[in-house]
Length: 339
Image (cartoon, rainbow, N blue to C red; front, top):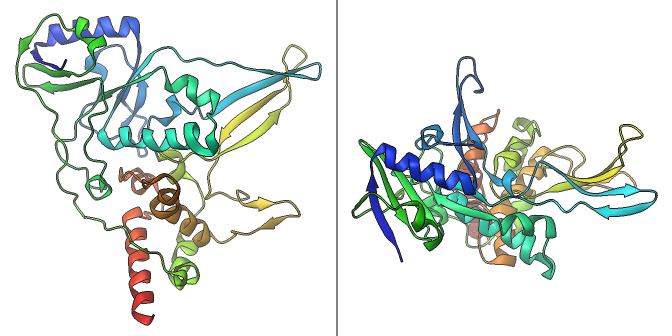
């Protein structure tokens, strides 16, 4: 049964400390001096131990997907020619997420729990121990287009917490967490969600064949430097490579590791015989954008992009996902007119 409360600062911190005793809590945290530019801060996902550490208002440059999909993960080790699975486990973990990032979990679940009819055991073990707390978005950030993508609202969360002038407001949706909130005043509390994008985006209904050879993609060949930051910041990019890592010394065992990769970097599409079917950066960009907005949806029924705008923020060449989608719409309209 849903419970909504207003709590003073002491009550809220007491509730949070009790929760943190039972769960690992991961949330946006402002890290002083770690920003992209001199004397700037970085807001990123870190383990927190108090409500006061959580950055409720700023946007993180990178998503929280590493909680479920570590940047580097040991899959199994080799001992005298035998492979032994490394059964990694994650303690019960709460992650504070905005609505778009909660929608991103559906994409990750589709890739690692549904795709091919088999579960990825490494992902599944972490996912079953993850619980979502909601961070609201009272208004859109400049780069967001979550309303256009249908990811601005959600009900898939256990608890919602909002800082207010004299304390916090809380909405407890999951019965497991009611016992942590024995105090506070009953009140009407509901999260606020973004209602309108700064710049609305319309997804193409049909992709014309002329799109693939259109000269517009050459612009991205000139601008994109293939750094892969768009992929690493994205909450739904899942590409990885698997590498065998030799032992550092006689006390260690060789391991096979799963490591994040990127469809934008050199050699990602390299095949046997030194054949690379996607050399130009513009071709890589076209692949990424189409996979996000059309190809994934054909298989799973939902777009892969959630409109968080992080790729726009971190791109050193200021390439915009919104602009890429506009480019596709322009090409498709042009193709339809010719046809």
